Image (cartoon, rainbow, N blue to C red; front, side, top):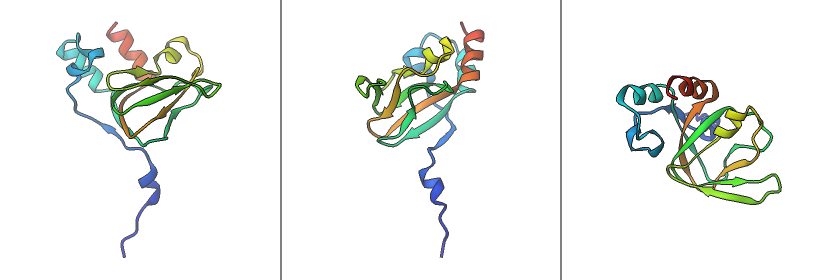
Length: 129
């Protein structure tokens, strides 16, 4: 009988990705060398409906760009502030301001995001102003 690692079933998939970055509006003005630099720091992460990307008050760990799905931004009073979808991004203000997250972000349905870790995001900003 084959053994299954049930923890792997629950773990969000995170891996390097090959995507047409020039099709993402945020990166559309970048040249080939700049796109390659961004691509070298990006991971693709899948979220299931109801998954929390981060919670209000947590320290910022990454910048996120939505490829697929919808994500709900929730205030500290549990009110929906906005629904984000393909092409939208989040997490940058907490990194730039060096402050804890001011909202919670939850996957409204299964989704796929590009994730750039905080340190890589800051390095990319200095290399590609």
